Image (cartoon, rainbow, N blue to C red):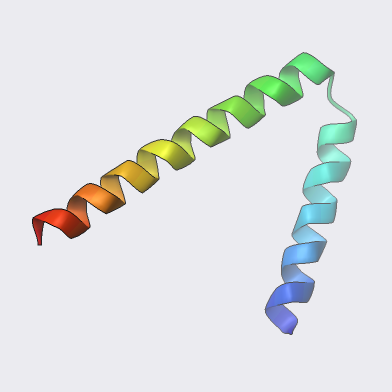
Length: 51
């Protein structure tokens, strides 16, 4: 339960920060985070297959 509360608090802080940025900057940051997550997922999947 504490983890859920902490996650919601961080989400609220992040959304508050994004609301202050222009839309193109927010979209660019979101795209960069999405690419990083895809690369991370691909590396993790590759690492599990080679074990």
